[in-house]
Image: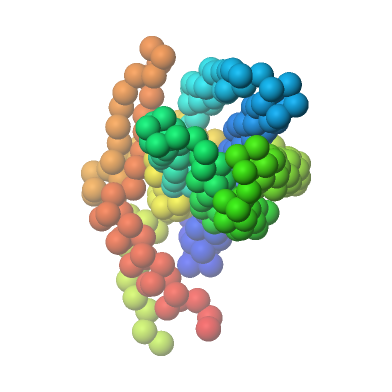
Length: 198
Length: 95
């Protein structure tokens, strides 16, 4: 960089150009939403089919599919962490939010073990809404914000239905708040990457 | 018109570029800063040391996967200096 004849206008250009360069540092957040959104959708749909259609007693075994998510997420986090050259506040906030969400899901599950699972889905759907609403605000990506609000609405409505039908509300909430916005985010990030040639 | 004095530490293209990059992130690796500023490693090292000496940035040297890694982080003193610099800069720009 040239240090000679450095004018205030050039100072301003340097500041603007550097700030825009940090903004171009994209993280592929969509893959985690897609992985967990699809896995939970498969698990709940599978549970619905096993319980309601086949009357299989051990329908809950379908949730073991989530171990694939834990293994794959950890693998991605380690791989991405090795490549990571910069830590942004957005990235940190997202990591902390979803760590807190994962712990909250675990705590809720432990509470339901004690209290019974009959009304678990309205609470789980409410949690989906919280995670995606806050993620949407952090990433400034409206489809997640809308998805989060709709999940909260579904959470309230689902409480008036039986457990079996609450599962269908959960599948709808996952589609609206995770899967559709995550596909839109992926498209948005790919467009931004090609616009900046990265 | 009243012109405010510009901090000589920040009124240098490369040092200002480094601070402007660090103001928007939590921390960044030396290689990331070099990539974004297009500076040579030698020149960047010198300027980073100057920023560190005045307390505008914190430099952490560590090992990651057996490779040396230099991480830079803006300090609260650096943030204040950058804010004062931008305020002073405004007095030079046409309104």
